[in-house]
Amino acid sequence: MHRIAQFMKVSKEQFVSSMREEFPQYTEADIEDMYESLALPARATRGSAGYDFYAPFSFSLPPNTTIKIPTGIRVKMEEDWVLKLYPRSGLGFKYRLQMNNTVGIIDSDYFYSDNEGHIFIKMTNASNEGKTVEVAQGVGFAQGIFLEYGITVDDDARGIRNGGFGSTSKQ
Figure 1 (cartoon, rainbow, N blue to C red):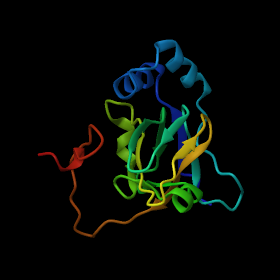
Figure 2 (cartoon, helix red, strand yellow):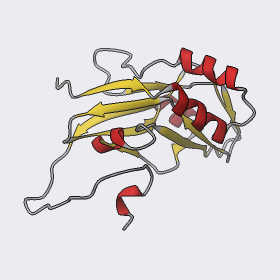
Figure 3 (cartoon, rainbow, N blue to C red):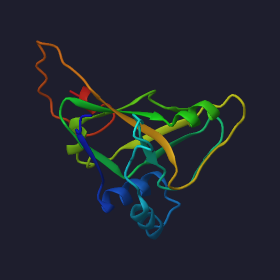
């Protein structure tokens, strides 16, 4: 096994700011309690490939609705690795829970962004059976898998990331 990464929390200030933006119904005290309760992603068994991401708060997701979750988590990893995010298998199977971008891609340089590399997970309940997804605070709802990647022999990328979605294609 390659030990190539380390999960950590974003700062309390970053988490509070992100939660206020997405979920204004929570008080600052509520958000600070959530922050203190955040668990770092972990594998459930020795044979697990995926690191479970845990819900920072309880949520209910009726069919055909979407939620954008500030996880409070960032990851520092070696340069030639990527973290790919997916729904937990059981939630995808039972509820057709899907990532809005199909697969979340966390690049190694995202860690150094102004938002501290804060990982957000946006999911939709695409249930065609009318099932509502209920996730309790602290329960795994997504999973991340680290993969090594290669580049072409003539690659000359020199851009510097500062941001998340779409930031590497901005000119």
